[in-house]
Amino acid sequence: MENINQNQWVEKIQNDTNAVILDVRSPEECAEGMQTGAVQMNIMNTAQFIADIDKLDKSKNYYIYCRSGGRSGQACMLMAAKGYNTYNLNDGMLSWSGEVVIP
Image 1: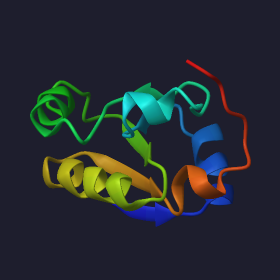
Image 2: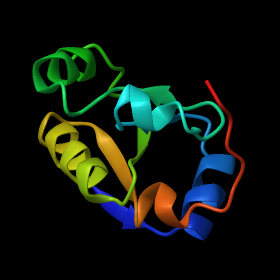
Image 3: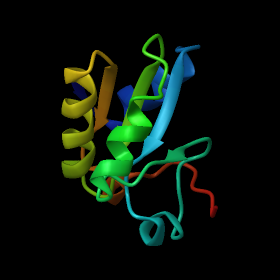
Image 4: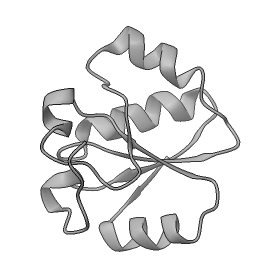
């Protein structure tokens, strides 16, 4: 797990052919806008979240964000413990100034 800022996030994703972006916020939060290409996986539904991450490809790099960086940090730790390569967006969507799409 690596904590990175928005500039590092954008640069890494642009140069990473194995990048997968995960939004671990609730469906209600995601309805306010998500990063382009992000997949929503609600960490607050713990059993479903764990079942979903167990289906993910361990050869990919997972860029994970939430509202402020706390839940995504937890998701990164859970996934790293299972052998996934993860990056946590510091400060999450609160400080995001990039493009946002409404799902």
